[in-house]
View 1 (spheres, one colour):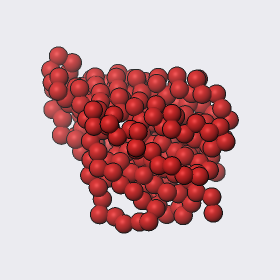
View 2 (tube, helix red, strand yellow):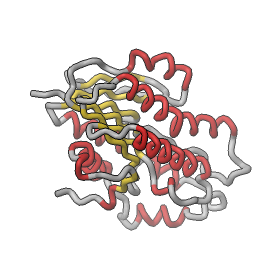
View 3 (spheres, helix red, strand yellow):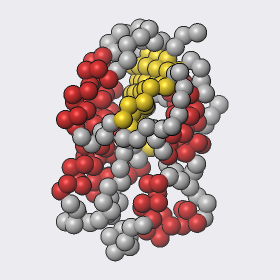
View 4 (cartoon, rainbow, N blue to C red):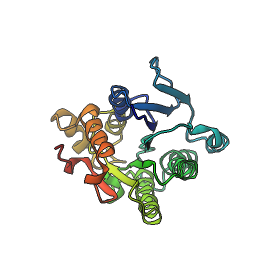
Length: 244
């Protein structure tokens, strides 16, 4: 059976964990999973690496040995790790937290995408880079200065990569996953309403049952990865997907 490779960041919880579980159920996929925390999970098709992606010097030192070699028919990089950061107005943000957020949300996926393309240059191998974005990449949200900015920058980076790499076998996506019932949403609901005017709206998402499960979104992400010919645009939103 032909083998494919999924490289995923932020696999230990939330959407990343749901995607990991889904692809481990597919015997054709090997998975390299990168996160600060390793899971107590054993599979002959899973390799886990403990790495804090906000520590760029550590990531840079590991880039040359990070990507597995092998005769893969498809290789996927899913940059999923991210952080909402401090939910505060600009002018009240901590420099340390701002730096960590930019490192994790933007620079780490830029590093990984750059190294991914350098390591896997064969034109015959199918390659997909999927960067998890947000609706906040295209609209300003008060209190989310760092999050909106890093997601917007990552979307533009993805667009540039797609324009440079015009190939039938290479696809780039910036994917907004919708509003998912994860720990990030818990963090958002703990915000101060003085810092985050949309707080009541996000509390209502939870209390009104409007949040989507990570498993449901993972199915849509997998559908995109397995059917790139159906997705011709770089900027995607899972809320517009029809699983056919």
